[in-house]
Image (cartoon, rainbow, N blue to C red; front, side, top):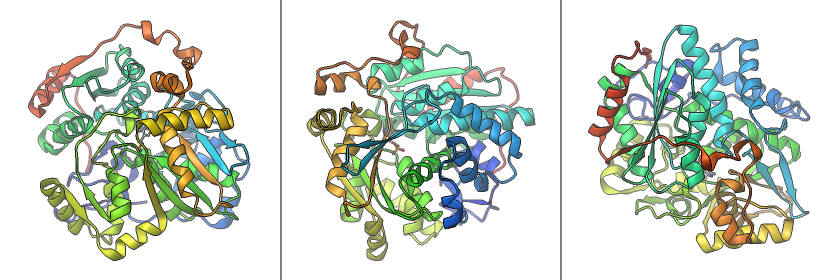
Length: 478
Ligand SMILES: *Cc1c(COP(=O)(O)O)cnc(C)c1O
């Protein structure tokens, strides 16, 4: 399998890359995002054969075509097994029906940090470490988090000798549980940085490091944000897993995805391109609804970010959206690069009528504000006895309005454990959800974190300082 950038052709014509290079690099050198040159295809028989298989086996079969020769079979199977052994349930991602409503919750939060990010990052951390160690190399992860990626990435690479991690988060805008899940990891290779700014500022700072190619090469920067294709790959698995349980390939399934950076729902789109019968997707947003407005109007217009009860979705510029736009621009990397540059300066991006028609056939979208989020948490508990977190609640609320066909099962991705956002859940239900036992003493653990102004120069200086005198870094071929 070969990979290209969404902006291929905009800066010369670099050769397509293999999985290993894509995983190590994260972001493409031309500023674009990597994706497969072609999607692997799964026949009806191959999809049917996944029925009844354990999660790890489904994961192996779905991901095998993407990794090519990066790992031999026993190694890849072992990495998958170890990644999912860190989950609290052997099912990894339990699918729960909501009464006989035809709606289902796909619980993706049983990993070590209680959000769906663990599903991909527990595997990515192991794949990275294996590859670097085999080559005798090191890498530096620089990432930005709206709350959940940070802890999941840190948990996935803590104490690994081949990797140093710098994680930026918007100061005061992540929940206390989210913050502590990052800052209480005192491993020497972990550097937590609280930025005076929003998540989008953090994302821009991280991007500035990657766009400084000399800096990027010097420190062998790698990205584990959802822009890293390896994460998308690992998320494709649970769409197959859930759809097969509900009758695929013989019956179609719909998915509602609480969305921020568009990484999760894009993985579903990938599953659809691979042959999984998905009737449609519902993109669920909170008050930060740039994506919902895009799917309603065909134009993306930046506004400002407002804090909500679902902070992991408090995002304006969804980095993974560029992967979908790539298809909407007829896979013309140069045209897309121009459009993205214009978007950065004008704050608006419009797609053509034909492309928009295609997108509307496959995607619905909706939004819910904080009050609606609390009502949804209370409603789900009252009707179905399930306590859901505010991100899942956004999906649950929006999904009700977008059942195109009541006979088609609707899966709502449950992206976080309710105990990760106890304030909102308590407000909605009157009951404070307890942290699972393994995280019980989180609120008493020691924290370590550095402050940083919203400045790329200050960030680079800090990274230089920390890495000064460090060992030689990996050379990433891009
Ligand atoms: C990251 C996150 C989201 C948004 O996922 P994207 O892939 O960025 O769209 C939703 N809910 C939770 C709990 C998250 O951590």
